[in-house]
Amino acid sequence: MKIVIGTDHAGFLLKEDLKKHIIYLGHQVLDVGTFDETPVDYPDFAKKVAMALIEAKVERGILLCGSGVGAGIAANKIRGIRASVCHDTYSAHQGVEHDDMNVLVLGARVIGNYLAMDIVKAFLHAHFSNEERHKRRLEKVMALEQCQYF
Image (tube, helix red, strand yellow):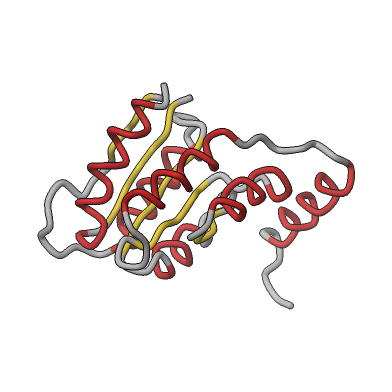
């Protein structure tokens, strides 16, 4: 599987470790930055990760920032992106299995490297269940993207 990974400055060091881990797990990595610890804005990298998915250059995305919250909010503004902050392995695989999550968001200042590696592994090894109840719910989530007003 080809995975896009991106981060702001807060997640740079973790991103570098996760790239090696993803390759070790047998996947390819598209790194969209940032490439050092110079302060940058997380929405720029959320967009880069999301666009790689939307343009079908990759199959899944991993996005990092300090807490994961800002990057996740930004990514979810783009139609077709289903991003979630996950700081445990259960949420990482369940998010894919039940909700077809396509972007894993991690807070580099919240979790350690080894836990992040376990979470990434759970995310990458998970598959959408295709159960009727999950497909029905996913269709409803996707319909929300079409709403302009509530």
